[in-house]
Length: 386
Image (tube, rainbow, N blue to C red; front, side):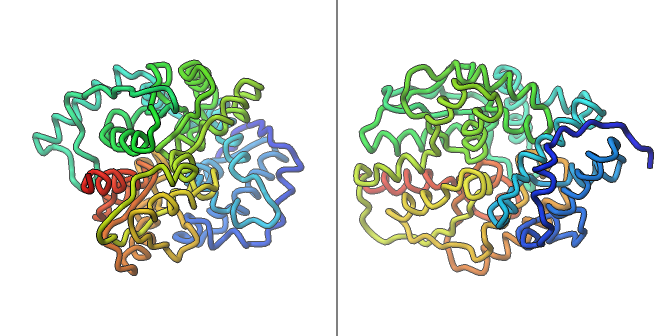
């Protein structure tokens, strides 16, 4: 394989922080399905060390770096506190800026996520194709609306971040979340078009400069000091990381305002309506970016548990394989990882699955499961009682 020169700007102290103990291995989804050392966190760090020392990489290096789902389950398991996610982001940014890691068509696709009109047109085309039965059901896409009804603000107590794909494809979820928030007496505000995309997928792809541009735009769309609530685990993790991404005091202050919507609701449980009648059994799938990055997944159980009997999975929060755009570029690994999650879910006797991340939700649906956002379930139960 031809060697490619590269400057990998990861601090040496970060690279040597991994002592190769192996405690991360059971928590790494790609290692679990491939059993390849280089597909594990410590294996990938070993590759980073070699690239850092030699100043060169090969195609095998790119393959193993690209095949990481970036679930960061290894960080939760690591007793040494190795910041694997940060090292992976730095590595992919180096690849994207110094090599042909991201082709032009992929860059254009990621850039389109920040163009609300382009995304709306593309989504409309997919919606029409769905109605003509030209979109395979195995993709697990929700019914994409051709004509979108606008979200109507009801006050200024909290902001609700709407994002890109979720707003274009799953705006009804935002409406359900808004109704649950309003049931506590809170007024909900929505940002303008400057908050069209959080930049999470761009960071995952190594396109950090574009992510920083989107972050600066997004911050401008949330004036004031009201909490910024997010109903997508991946977007919430990214918004909370703006301080690190931009390295400014204003970004750090912005990130301090960001809460996963369940975090905020868990602080206002007594303001939520009470539920009467029988409680369905719902198995909760913990999105990686809520459990391993934000580390606030317990709030979902608190809120959902007020209305249903929640069932936890006995798999230590192992990734479902969605990984943002990962399942599109690595469908076989994503499918193999999902099979393990589905098996864990089917071992319960729950009636439905709740997932607080749209990517996980759609990926699990494409595997044949009935999945809803936790607050869609809460909204339906509250509305039924009214």
